[in-house]
Amino acid sequence: KSGKMVEVLYPTNHYINHNRQLIASQKIAEEFAGRTVVEGEAITKKCNVYLPAGYDEADVNKKYNVIYFLHGVGGNHFEWMLDKNEQGVPVICSILDHLTENGETEPMIVVFPEGRSAINWENCEFDPESTSMLGFYYFDYELRFDLIPFIESQFHTYADINQTSASAKEYNRLHRAIAGLSMGGMQSLNLTFGGYRCDSAFLCGAISPWNNGLVETVRTPGMEDLFSFVGAFSNAPTTSKGEILGEGIRTSGYTMSVLHIICGDSDGIAYEMGYQKAINGLMKEAGDAVKLYSPAIIKGGKHDFGVWNYGAYQFLKQIFRNEEK
Image (cartoon, rainbow, N blue to C red; front, side, top):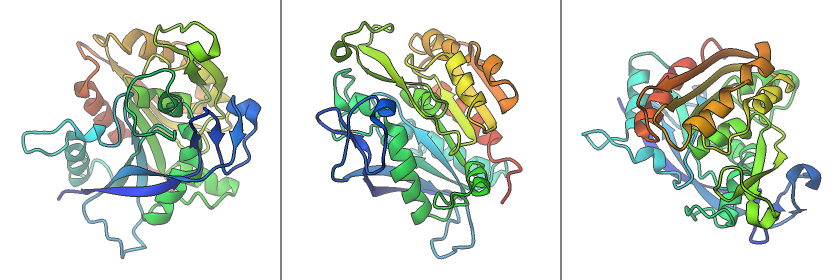
């Protein structure tokens, strides 16, 4: 019993334009955005959506949890599907199918977005001065105001972002999860827990502490009100310090159900500058605002799908447990 993958188009009203301004249909203060905010026309983006076996468009009474899996700096909404088994099936889909078939998880909808909220979102090059790179650090506005509303209007989900009472927000976040590999892992942590956005060091007149052409700018408002389950697999070096992330969790007013961070100790990209930095001091600041915290190190693990698929497998088994239906 296999799920199916569909590619869908959706309008995006929140993105970085060619002038490095934030296009937004919502009122967003420029001091919080860290740049000029202007109105503009919507652009059309793509995402892949995994629908579990048995999903029936006509059955409006059957509801599903949703997880958003984010890609890396050189990837796109197909990156998670690149690693395939001997039968040619993407490993992530095989994991989802088997966990569901074995009763280890409930059937769930999985969204694989394009993580660059930028006018040139299809540009996958690593260029610190490109608006597509800047778009990684502004994906939270697109998620909140464009992608999540689209998914929850088009598919049968427990969560309904249009319900805005305090009790509805708490209910909704218990039915959403977010996780990512490499740059997507950074996004899952920074954008959810009030970490820092980044921009071109050259254009900011600063020196990059990671020697990758990027520097920190302003903190994000956080998305703890949207997600109760967060995972990061080999999170990128621009991930904010653990003390910053922990403070964001503690001061949000929400409790995180699951926080799963994993990395290989032979990962020359993410292990020290990403993973170790993120976990250092995180729980000391977060305190009891995290129910299940599960950091993990894969001995000999590198910056590859061996770690990422295993991280996804472990994360999927931990989330959406005993939540209110």
